[in-house]
Amino acid sequence: MRIVSGMRPTGKLHLGHYLGVIKNWLELQSSEECFFFVADWHALTNRYTDTKDLKDNIKDLVRDWVACGIDPTKSTIFLQSSVKEHAELSLLFGMITPKSWLELNPSYKDLKFNLYFQYVRDFLLGKGIKVDEELLKSTIHEAFYYKKEVDFESIKSKLLDTGLKEESVSDMIQNLTEGEIGKKIDTFGFFGYPVLMASDILVYKAETVPVGEDQLPHVEITREIARKFNRLYNEIFPLPKALLTETSKILGIDGRKMSKSYNNAIYLFDTPEELSKKVLSMKTDPQRVKKSDPGRPEVCNVYTYHTVFSSKETVSSIYEGCKNAQIGCIECKRTMLENLERFLEPVREKRKSISDDDIHRILKSGKDRAQQIAKQTLEEVRNCMNLWQD
Ligand code: TRP
Ligand code: SF4
Image (cartoon, rainbow, N blue to C red; front, top):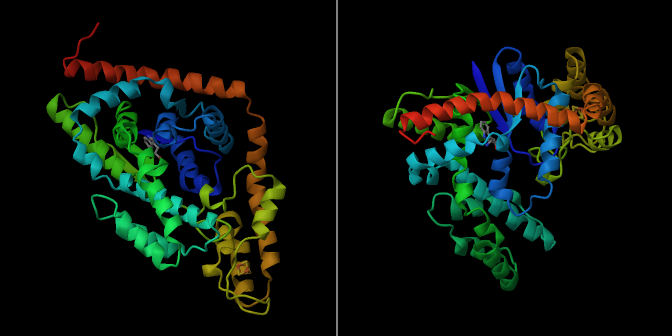
């Protein structure tokens, strides 16, 4: 089975990435033909204003993958932008993709929603205003989600209700509508995100695409594009299927979803000191105040980490000890930390051994392998579309 998947180079990998994506790739690479690529063009769709870290992020991502065990002798590891056929196919797919497929794409709305949400939240936090995230989310959701245009007036009036000054709210709304945020992703490139993604997948005629749930709409558009192409010209593309990777149950150290923007992530390459600081500051069962209070491991994030990184015996003894108030949270965290460290230590060491030269070599040989197939597909595509061949 041929598998294609990619990740945008947006910074260091954290445990959520490992458990949600990489672990799955590791299993696949042992039995399937895998193409894993760094989606640097996709990173540009919403980060085109700030590209100074792009090269470093690409290197970091490849280094992280290889340190985690993605093996360049088993999988083809390459950079999207070095196989130009992705771009050519994307241009051709653009010809046959109706705008409406892209406008209705829920991921497009989600990304926009997140940008608005983060902007308003950071604005309020910057003013020293405590934010009820759920309330803010629903305010923006209402103003935005089921409407064609964003209803900025309703956001504004809800914010004024919370006692904010007219002046500062107006400024913010103006920024939203006219400034960076509103305009930033109203670009051709961002709009065409799924078309490029369809090309990434179909240029290798992949049958299976391991992705998280958030990417399902994109895979759906990929299938639509393949179907339409096959109908118009020739049956050359398979209809790829998404292989849903389980979203990681592991939460950030504050109990929210693990994310760089929440500042709550445990990175794969945190130093042992950083790791220990983070683990010891993790939120536990809020009802357990004293050691003599029985705890509820089922609602405790530290316990969830145990279920991933500790042995079966440890997990059940933690469960009992917590329920019966026999172990303290600090002790429980220390045990978890030891097991997490045992998992991360070898990965950290391996990472140190991968030089920039190694990365260039890996990407070069991956490019050669990927391009060979991509070239063949483009020949076929040009042929059946009756394009000029020189
Ligand atoms: N959009 C994906 C993400 O953000 C990355 C991606 C780009 C991808 N092209 C792809 C994933 C093709 C799978 C297949 O996670
Ligand atoms: Fe969580 Fe462990 Fe404390 Fe129980 S003992 S509440 S599992 S940290």
